[in-house]
Length: 335
Ligand code: GTP
Ligand code: MG
Image (cartoon, rainbow, N blue to C red):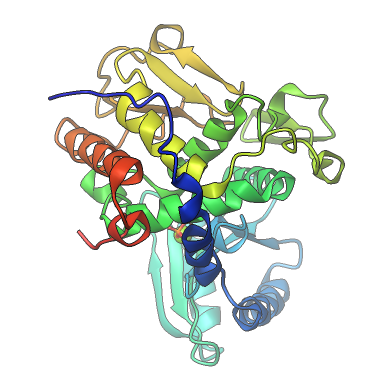
């Protein structure tokens, strides 16, 4: 296959800033939706507190990381500091409690990779998954939200990328493509590496936040209110960044040898992580390091078939951004 690397953006790129901004704005959830989520959360907190007074409920995932689309389901983590709980028993008990409070479609999935209770709230129409003690997900949700507060271009870029990935069906981990979480990390990393940078590397700065979760120390600079001018010497706009992002993943990324790392704000070698060969089901064909669980490659789901699909989609997107007359419509054409 012919590989080309475009060195410069097309010279009419700024014509597309307004249409991309319109797409971005259309994807921001309305305030009423957030209010409904808070309402359901309050109800759940009430129910849980009656049975487990020391437990806490946290929102995580797209409903809390500021990269959520309208009408998303919400992800909730029940955190309880008790060494001898049995997760399955607790989920079954929780399912009973929820059902007797008129929540619908209540289902305990105790054998799933991440065991959960599912439910639907008939009042707000919101569906919800509750897991137990998945605290790392709560902490990485906070990291993403904190990055989003530094420069609005992260949220703009990530919304466009997620919308593209969903439209093109490359946001399906069970089919070997990447999770939304992986795409947001790719966007953060891309903005850390712009010159001048648009985002800092929070984990390389003096920590102001530090917690220990499942034996992993999670610490970083979270006083992001003090960083809101960080990216201001870089004047790149949304259309340029969308172009640059797809150009990078289509033509510039070294898939064979490198790992993208938000934790270090740099590109690492596969060798130093020992991700050079297949181990079990982890093939490491595209490597994205989890910022806290550093032995975890978010590209592990990608296999030799889906890597081709993914790379062809990156190339298609880069090509559209480079020369299509209406990139904003073409990029999101349903697969
Ligand atoms: P959408 O539902 O697609 O809008 O996005 P989402 O942000 O909810 O993403 P996703 O469903 O991919 O993941 C939900 C949350 O689970 C993420 O925000 C992470 O906190 C966590 N998560 C997802 N995948 C992983 C993973 O492989 N490792 C870890 N540690 N956390 C993950
Ligand atoms: Mg989700």
